[in-house]
Every structure is written in C-alpha cells, then in structure tokens.
Length: 362
Ligand SMILES: Cc1cc2nc3c(=O)[nH]c(=O)nc-3n(C[C@H](O)[C@H](O)[C@H](O)COP(=O)(O)O)c2cc1C
Image 1 (spheres, rainbow, N blue to C red):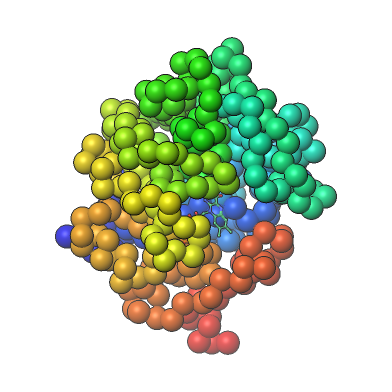
Image 2 (cartoon, rainbow, N blue to C red; image 1 turned 60 degrees about the horizontal axis):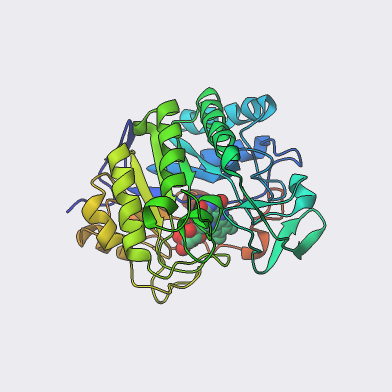
C-alpha cells in the first residue's frame, strides 16, 4: 500500500505526496469578492501540500453569499487571483480552485436577490451577512430555463480559473450547497427531470461536471461530496445508492479525483447520520479518491493501508500548520487551530501560524 509521502497522479496534476489541503473558507477577500495579497502569502506558505484546494470560490454573485469570500466571475477577480497561483507555483506547489454556488445558504442582503435552490425550502439556522447573522429566507426553485445559464456560469468560472493560473478546479457538490440541495431528498422536491429518482437528482451534478470537463478537461476537474450526514439541513434518507450512482457518473466522465468529507462517529466537524458511503463509491469510481475529516497522521496512513483512499485531505490541521507534510513525516507536534480567528479577516490566525523552524527560532 502507498505511503502518504508517495506521489499520486491526479489526472494531469502530479501531487508529490498524498496530503491534500482541504478547502477552507477564510473571508480574506474584499467586499467585492476580489482576492487580496495576503491570500498569496497564506497559500504559498502551504505549498508543500500534494495539492491545495482553495477556499470555496463563487461562480457568480447569485451563488456567493459569504462575506469577504472570493469569486471567479469578474476580470478584477481573475487579475487578483494571478499573484496567488503564481506565489504557490513559485513555492513549488499546485493549486485548484473550489467552485461554489451556495444555493439557499445565502442572504439576499449579500447577493442582491432572493436565494435559489432546487425547491422552495428554507435552510435552518442563520445566514452570514455583512450585518451579522440573519435568518435564512425561503429559496426560489430554479426554473428549468435557468439551468443553461447556471451551467454557463460554471463554464465561465472555469475559464477564469484557467486564465488566473490555477492547475484545475474542484466542483463543490458537498456540504448542503446548491448541487447538494439537488442531490439529496430532504431538500429536492422537484417533479421535473431534476427531481424524484436518483437518476434525476444526480442530473445537475452530471451536467455541471460535463460542462466543466468540456471547458478545462476531465484531467483537471475534481469533485467534492459529503454523503454520510446532515449538513446545513441537507440530508438523504438513503445515501448509499444515491452516491453510488453519483460516483459511477463521475467515473464515466473520467474526472481527475473525487474528494469526500465523510466524518467518522467520533468526528469533531459534524457527525455522521449514516455509515460511511465511500466503500460503495470506491467500487464504481476507479480514479483517485481522497477522504477528509479529522485525520492527523497515523490514522491517515491507516486509511491508505486499508485501501480506503488514495489520499487524505486535511482541513484545520493544514490551516494551523503551514508545513503539515513535514510535521507528519517527522512526527512533530502540531499547532492547534484558533477557531475564533477562522473568518475574521487580517493576518492574525491566518498567516501567523509558524512553521516548525520558525517555532523553534521564536
Ligand atoms: C474554517 C473552515 C472553513 C471551511 N470552508 C470550507 C470550504 O470553503 N469548502 C468546503 O468544501 N469545506 C469547507 N470546510 C470543511 C473542511 O474542508 C473540512 O471538511 C473540515 O474542516 C473537516 O476536516 P478537518 O477535520 O481536517 O478539519 C471548512 C471548514 C472550516 C473549519
């Protein structure tokens, strides 16, 4: 079985190790969703990842309701992403953009219109806005004749990712956002070809992935899913056949990698409601598969040893340890993540986590 430190081919991208940086929203862009210079420093610090998956990045204003999160729909955003990808490449790394449409998980005060989703539902909890947390509003179901425009938005963001120097993209189909709102049966009540049967509920995922692979190539396209539990009110009554069919569809499209947040029973970032789904998916998805949530080192290697995954994506541990691969290789202690600073803006809790040498020198 491979070591975490063996290289892995992810389509056209050669990852020198199997420790991926999981996507992490950090809210350090401008109010116009334009990346800022400090983001180049942050990502370059983490260039020793086998592959960096960026924070979720909006494909359109309609899809981006997170304050100060970056987008990829405007020329200004493309221009401002270039120094970020350049800094990562200069530091020897690889970076793909996570493409995001939040669907109903937004507030109209941020996106400027009523939220859209698969069906007229309301997310539980409160939305992040520029004026603090506010109640979610009831979403408007996307009309059938709006789907081509949505696919165009994914294609344009993918073209922009290429222009900005990214090595590829990851389609965010996890965590209760728009594509997940179509996939799972407690948020999708449509009676057209995008609702009802499993084949219908995976249609949007398949169409988005097809458009993205047509634009950038399947060998530069990844997908993220979160099959085994409730996220932001989105869940499924029978996830195993649903996500098995989704994995088979993604296998047909030949994507470069599939990455999944599959929390385990003792997880610290949401808990599972269902047994793991990745075993049935791995049987039909033949490409590289990465698992995520609560891995730290030995448990990550154990997942590779068991043949469960080809790579592991690390979120909070990478956030707090810019040199995570070295720390795991040398079994060095890990910096704890400072949760209160996750989203607040500025350098504190962002670019000031020391690497091991800096920590020893301090
Ligand atoms: C601060 C923070 C921001 C996150 N942002 C994203 C995101 O933008 N996209 C995404 O798919 N998941 C996001 N997640 C989930 C992480 O990618 C990951 O699934 C989660 O942290 C569990 O992995 P870990 O135990 O290795 O941290 C975020 C998690 C945290 C803690």
